[in-house]
Image 1 (cartoon, one colour):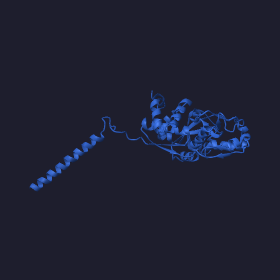
Image 2 (spheres, rainbow, N blue to C red):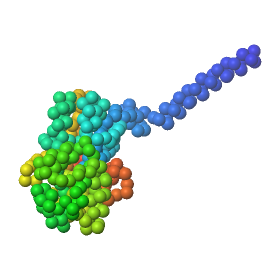
Image 3 (tube, rainbow, N blue to C red):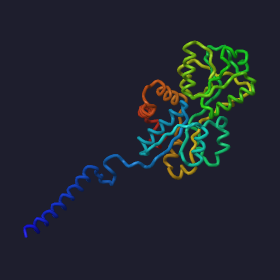
Image 4 (cartoon, rainbow, N blue to C red):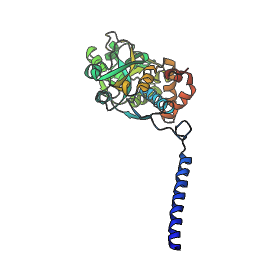
Length: 302
């Protein structure tokens, strides 16, 4: 009889303890009265942003990332790649958005090839420019005059990643102007490092450059005149997405459509990233917090 009583007591105790544990778990993670979690909200999904290692792309992509995470409740994956694989990944749906498409000239060939499988959300920056850039102290003012100063520049034009539109345009410029120069591929950071070293030594250097870029705020530079118009007129920077993003994530598409920076705003963000030892995402978050009204306007908040 005592054995049976002990079994019943043990069973009742187990049930009571189980209820208490469930209650404790409920209390720890909690559920608010409106049915939402009292801890961190569950993610609304993952947004995949892809970018090239160019100053403006790094700045805009990291800013969009922290806004999507901090303000909109999404997880965000960012991937760096060259331009060609970026357009391939967008067209296949493997990536969601690219915020650094230069149109109508620089990335025209990619839009011709992949445009039917992409959506263009419009421009996020106006009056962008590409071309050959030199320090202001260099005597040469036009691409036409470069062959007469080949030795001064060691017969080299310092470029960026080989798949970039500006590299294709520079190859065309070499042919159009009959330049006896070698185009040296590299990366955006490698190009600015070479430019900075040359300026420190007061040496002549030609780089494939573009604006907006923080280097124009840091150093006194100039674009070489392009009388043949190889590099085209000023362009706009567009946000390109995979097909279907607007239907799958309408709030994300609306935010990316509204996202717009003027020259001063983008210049300040790029400059702060370039001058900081912090990760670009940390700098972008601080910039977001200092520009709440602008960010709210992109989110449709008053």
